[in-house]
Amino acid sequence: MELDYTIKRSARRKQITITVERNRSVVVHVPESTSEEKIRAVVESKRQWIYEKTRHAQKYGVPHPPGKEMVNGESALYLGRQYQIEVVQNSSEEIRFEQRFLIPARLSSERRKVLRNWYMDRATEKILPRAKKFAHDLGVEFADARIVDNRYRWGSCTTRNNLHFNWRLIKAPMYVVDYVIIHELAHLLEANHTPQFWNIVRVQSSKMDQAKKWLIENGQILEEDI
Image 1 (tube, rainbow, N blue to C red):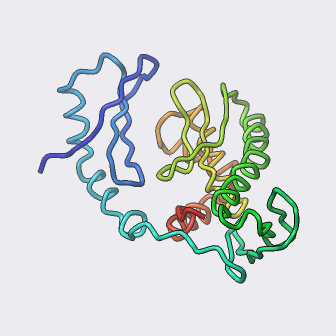
Image 2 (cartoon, rainbow, N blue to C red):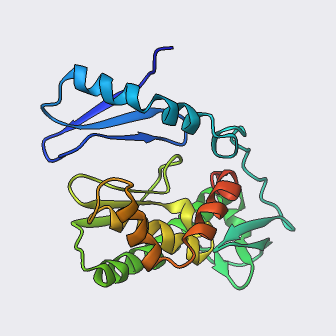
């Protein structure tokens, strides 16, 4: 059976790596001068691994769940806990969080959008400073870090040493957020998922195994619109 994959070339890349995105697409990252024959040979050697990854029942098998209808009594996830949503009568232009989400009635027609923006702001406030902290702990430097809207990846480290974190991560427990940050920073020391790479992550993230398990079991919930 022919494997479908996308090739991404980079002059800065030294090795060939293969990633399987959350939408099951396969991306082969290669040095700019790598021949098509070499790429095919590497992909073929990883055929079984790719087959297993793209058919992972928990990660890919469940259709993307619909977003919630946000009404009084409904709840939304934040840092691993569900908090009640309440539409309130006031003149505020913003959501308030007081162990529940208080959404002004005047914003109720666009409450999904304003809650998403609230998540984006909280992700910026909490995730980016922690990226700097863990970078210092690891003794690495990154070019830039930003919060992005990417449904199929929790985080990424580009060949230009830029870090991208999915805003939906802010809905996960902090130990899961920290694991994703450390995971991406570790790529600045080791590009591939080698035993050395996982040792680096495990030293910095004592709950690495729990975090990976949490993402497998709850990733579909994080991917909900809200």
